[in-house]
Length: 318
Image 1 (cartoon, helix red, strand yellow):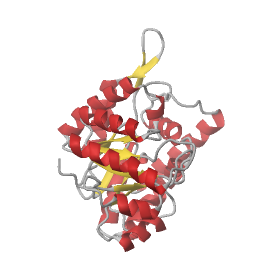
Image 2 (cartoon, rainbow, N blue to C red):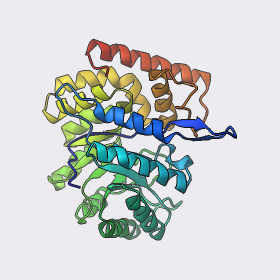
Image 3 (cartoon, rainbow, N blue to C red):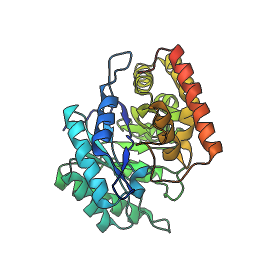
């Protein structure tokens, strides 16, 4: 598949249901339906989301068994094929050998691009060790007919940062087709593009979509876009066209909610906001993650209502 990275792609949430024993399990059909619903939405300029991210690295992925995760991705691959967009999934392991196995497994269930986080080790790997980790992922992906996307998230607790020098080196590997940079310090993007103007960089934090675009990012991966896809796609259209004032209006409208995308409990917060959006707070959009306090729930609700009111003025609900 020839992947066009210019645009925005949703990191979809899993819908859950209770089994006969009362345990929560993935509702594959509902998750597929929701993913399709997001991919159908057009921005004001007529474009749509240009990819589908399932089982990323900082969301519900950490709570899923390998079997659950692969089954989820296999079901989402059907949706990605229907809408002719790439399916992207995350990977993070302790050793490069484990990483190779994960990349192969993801390729086997229909994943087109693997977002690779740094190794999950206590000690910071050396530059040589870090390079070897990504090199085996790239080699394995090449053999499996998929690509990889090194994922640098220096702001996320528990993940090692990838140096700018190493990111530039990794970008030259044959099957590295893009870099994902999740940080509020978008000067990292600008610095790398000054060194290599041909890099394809995606932003990973909803609050910096416009700023990352100014720095040279060609798109991004969004959580808030699952809740307000029309607004997210339209904002990226404006960014791509250099209509910065119009893009900034949408960014400001979304700000109360997109702020949550940069918090440690982003998945729990955004999934609750999506539950509010779908009148499903206690239903399928429950989470395997941490339980929120009433104060946190009230805060998310207030942030959602404010974003929705602002977007309604801009005719961006849909």
